[in-house]
Image (cartoon, rainbow, N blue to C red):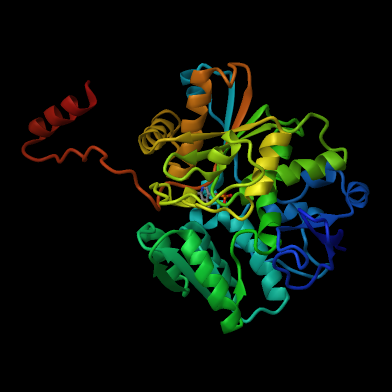
Length: 411
Ligand SMILES: *Cc1c(COP(=O)(O)O)cnc(C)c1O
């Protein structure tokens, strides 16, 4: 059975009937969120019962908007490992540090969770086609899950989006369009075109189900840390579904009585060239304002006007967290550092979370004893860092090659 009671506006509170295609609040146009009968969920499932289930995000079925006979469109998303990072922790003078390696998801990012869930609901509710504005990873994931579901997908990305993300969408049969500008331009275009095609607009938080998929990162994290919360959660923030989703997960688990400790301090990390959340946080504003001329090579962070700005700022305020901007150089350095000391080639967006942590450690805002989780939102493969040293080419006699190897490895 489903434990969904209704879908609620996060600003005016208006209740909407679930199990139909919903976009934003019908009264005030703000973001919607799915609500559950949490006491009933707590009666229906135990932590022990959960432990016996297979890994993957649908193990949390009672906290997802799946109907009784609804089978998800899945590629095996979820179940991303929470890796302890002892060598990196030592490097930063900390005791406990983890990375939740979302790069191990299908299509190489946590976007698989949200789009798997959203496309499951969209298919059940009978959409004809899906259109999505994206900075790259969301489009790739939408294309893959659309292919899996047999639903046509159109993706609109800014020109300059990482080629591998475009290739991934094209390969999965999506129609890919580029536009001048940022995801904001792509979003405006999608909002105009999709309804006239009779297709559904899957833009970030313009429908309530993507958030439920992203939420499973928080449910998993809570279980992986044995239902204790970390002290600090570093999140590389673009549209904000991950941040808001993890916050929602912890709130639901607390309401069920499954976690006792307070929520972690959420820290939103953004790039200096596109930091609307950081700017609003520093100005103590209620919501974000459009960032002019967004520039960063961390494509997923290039979101100048996030629709969920208000909810993100609330999450930061209510958890006693904060927001931090980092430079392009710091992002590249952090990406290299994580690969060198822990063997994880993470996406630039995720590397920004580490760059943010380094800033907070340097300033003393994170103490050596704080237990910190970084959400490593994607893998690095789709977006290689610039200017890596070239491989040494070996030629000549075996002795000459040996000499070259010795010089290179210093042995
Ligand atoms: C989309 C994306 C982000 C930003 O995530 P939001 O939850 O939308 O803020 C961060 N990292 C990667 C790799 C992404 O693809």
